[in-house]
Amino acid sequence: VELSAPGLARRLAREPRGVLATLAPDGRAALVPVVFAHEAGVIWSPIDGKPKAPGELARVRHAERDPRVALLLDRYAPDWSLLWWIRVEGRARVLRAADEASAPLELRRAGAALRAKYPQYAERPLFRDPPTLLCVDVAATRSWASSREAQRAAEED
Amino acid sequence: VELSAPGLARRLAREPRGVLATLAPDGRAALVPVVFAHEAGVIWSPIDGKPKAPGELARVRHAERDPRVALLLDRYAPDWSLLWWIRVEGRARVLRAADEASAPLELRRAGAALRAKYPQYAERPLFRDPPTLLCVDVAATRSWASSREAQRAAEED
Image 1 (cartoon, chains in turn purple, green):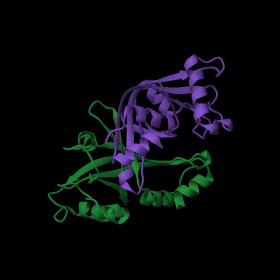
Image 2 (cartoon, chains in turn yellow, brown):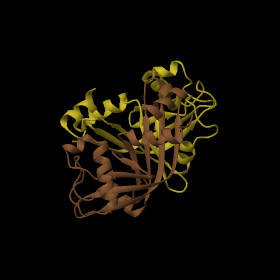
Image 3 (spheres, chains in turn blue, orange):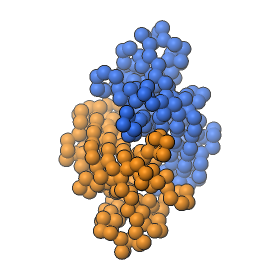
């Protein structure tokens, strides 16, 4: 069972985390869970204030070298009639700015969308200094649900 | 914060699902959630009876073409002090057999480990016919927890 287009858009809007795959210089897939916001065919994922290694993150270096990325959303449940996944393929761009206030429109829009989706950013920095944002232009989406009930849960809950 | 080696082994034993990345012929990462069992540095993931496209699965074709795979386990929570992830890199082998009873020892051991971990296989076929098993020889593991509490949860719960 596949998700409907409106159901897919609702799930992308609501789902709090996805697994991002970038491509390392040796061609291996590098996986990391990320938070993100979705608007009009673009996925925004901030390099935020959660604890991280210092310096430029691998996901940013990878995306600047090879923009092909993938994002997986999925639900696991012990009841296997409730499983679903959504797979997004796209091309990444890295947006940087000296500060958020003077940043390009897209980074400011992303900041607003991410703060609206994640109340956690009231207490943590949305961007590390200086702001860096991964933007993924969605090229293709596939989805799968193990039953009609799983499809309904993915589209509506 | 990283996980301890025993904590990591416990989590690999207990965690019900991971996100598998294989490499498509064009070099893109292909992501899919999988069930798996872990024993002595090998991860076993069956091509099981959950609904799937007919024919050889993409993950099997990819792994036979380029054995470099990655697996991510992670926990999301609205309380961001409880996040953790484990990233496994390895090389995949595909094991096939005419039937499980006459299969090589590794496939039979994997079958036993998967049935012990997933009671769901009492009601669903563990293998499609003929049995196909993805074996990942673990080469490297990295982990991250956002706090000591997240580390404890990943290692013990």
